[in-house]
Image (cartoon, rainbow, N blue to C red; front, side, top):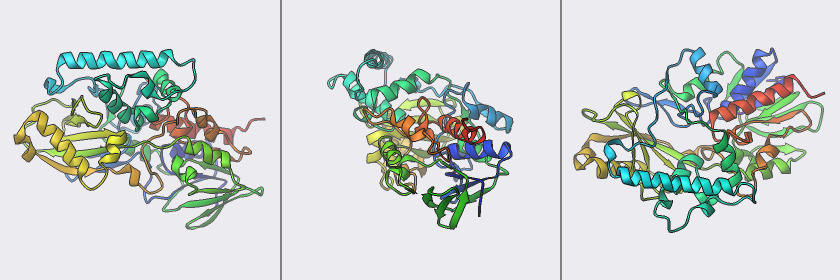
Length: 407
């Protein structure tokens, strides 16, 4: 197998790079280690027949998100209703006064953090007092948004995302992962092919894989940061700066549990419950996405890490819901599925955050090598990291550098 350009990694970034090259008439081959495309964008069909997203599930910053137009052009259905993350259905366990106080505490945290931007980088935990009664909730939100606790997240990195993001978050009925995988239709793709070494000493780049050696003039590397940081993909000559940059951009963790609901639904589509607003370990419960008899419970950061074994997350989610809804709900809730992204082979997590003091690692990771090796992925985005649209934009950017090299 040969290709003028080989793209390594069949997630959102790799698919975007390969599609851009393919449509420009270039000879391109996309290889993916797994037996499926999509990477951290994965839509699956539950036993109930409903399609849900194991990975990215929201068109964040939807009005400027390129996947929105791609989804619409391909005929997918976009639901523009609010996710209601700031709303507690029926005020269960989270009164309006508490909701107001929590919001004010989060606003104080954000203001303190933004005010410190001109200074040295610091962990987000510096901007909320340890004895603030709403610190656990703010830490839980960091888990959802960053996949990591406040103490692990860089102020400068966090602010770059916050200043670029908008509040329009839409959903795709057929699944976000379905849209992303569909974008790879009619392209040369090989799944089940694991790249292990890239020899870029000569004019022709040689890529050692589990299915033999590929040759290329250009290579786009669109793999999760642990693959580079842990040396699962190596280079000859070595590229220690890439390994260091990847190590400075670890993947946090966000997991989901899917429950079926038996009997009539008392809430509207896209209702929401925070399990316990006074705990750093709590789920964000999405009630009946698209009106389906399903609950999607979302865990992030250390809370998700602690619940990845066996059926711990499902039981935790059910316990939280029963405390809010009443004991008779226990018999109405049945686990259907759960994710364990930390254990996903050649992925090892959900989305990247920069270690404190290492915001520039994103730019270092994205920098091409000798105009022959190009890097893409959400971790390479300076403003839209942790998102599928950030991944898309870096993939397109890498492809355009190949098509239109700098003079």
